[in-house]
Image 1 (cartoon, one colour):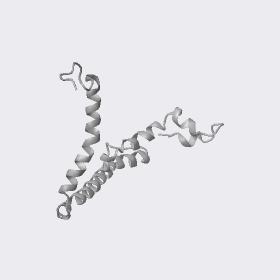
Image 2 (cartoon, helix red, strand yellow; image 1 turned 60 degrees about the vertical axis):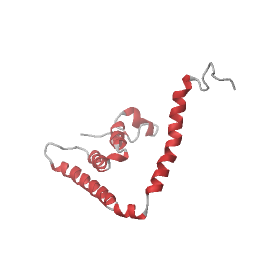
Image 3 (cartoon, rainbow, N blue to C red; image 1 turned 180 degrees about the vertical axis):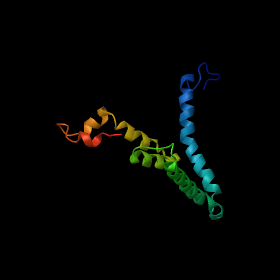
Image 4 (cartoon, rainbow, N blue to C red; image 1 turned 90 degrees about the horizontal axis):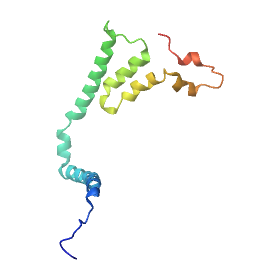
Length: 130
């Protein structure tokens, strides 16, 4: 082996990719090993309030979203849209945004026309009348 080398062992252009790969691959075992070494039955028993608090937050979010239906300045014309709003409010961290986006996408002809049989029968069922 000849030292010092004139060129580096790893090319400078690949260091960024290699560091991101090493972080991704090695971070998961590091997290699992640290959690596994500190987790015990006593620790799990002392955190009983976390699932309870999660249920309370979901129920409270659902109740508040349902209560908004009664407000005179917050009227939603279509029941399906309101149900989607309640789901999105109750479970905000489970990526409920597609629940809200999908019905609005289906209002465009380019989306729902694909699902109609030839001849266009059933078009009146897929369109909304405000």
